Image (tube, rainbow, N blue to C red; front, side, top):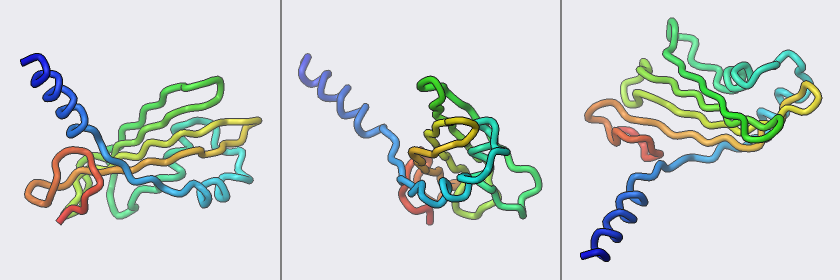
Length: 128
């Protein structure tokens, strides 16, 4: 019985873990290379995300977590999107600030689908 319980615990952790799409950081690093105007982690992720301008005021939630001296993990969640298949998108960016310049080390992305259009949890499967 103990082994069954342990197996179920491990299986539930593995099956509920989020999947992410990895985004190449080369272009964002080129774009921000000469900019000293991006001062905060929030400004950096907003520069990258560049949400659709056809939406009046998107519902964005941005959080940051300091990992090391000048290294941050920045998370942007765009909820209640005006999209027929996708309801939310999540971007997780890891970046370091060196001498007033940013270097993006990693970008991860996933999303949730609208009701009846696919997965309701964060994942990378295509929404129908």
